[in-house]
Image (tube, rainbow, N blue to C red; front, side, top):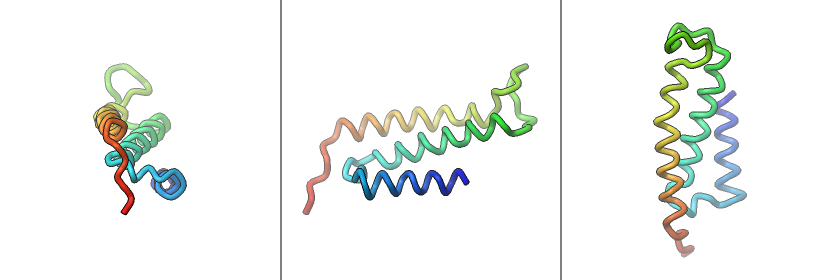
Length: 87
């Protein structure tokens, strides 16, 4: 379900808000959405990859941090650059 929701959110961002005109914005939204979905699903998963004595912090959540950092970089690039000119 997370893949379908992310696909629909990205389609909405492209078709309604035309965010594809800013280079880097769609990949930033994808990294943000996928990282959030993965971290949220990991909260309900009975995983053996828990880190330390925590009952909620797993390797899946830890691996979401690099995606959020990359998303922040792509958001910065997308906001800093001007929109593409329409032909």
